[in-house]
Amino acid sequence: MDFRLNIEESARAVFDEKRIGQVVYNFLNNALNHNDKDDKQITLGLRQIKGVLCIYVADNGEGIKEEDLNKIWERYYKVDREHKRYHIGSGIGLSLCKTILSEHHLAYGVESSYGEGSCFYFAINEEE
Image (cartoon, rainbow, N blue to C red; front, side):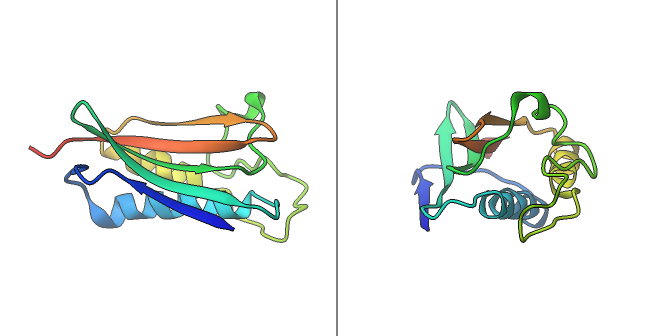
């Protein structure tokens, strides 16, 4: 597995460490569990763009079909309903992320190409 940490030194923000840490954990956990490739590649990154800190987790896993992208944030929704993988989750991880990020009024989303991987992200305004 190739794990990369891509952090800009100037990146700074104030946030609820426990709750936002939960989001990052869920994003990383999904990146690991939804990637059956021998050459797993996962990147945790922080990038400052015009006073906004963008935090993202990108992978080279299976990706998400376009028709599933708007459903993945729903509670108990699972893309893999046949449970082919060794890991079976509860289906609440991304719903929990949505709740936490919405409560903090943070923008979030996912970019994905089926068969190529996904990038989950959220943005935090710069520390004042």
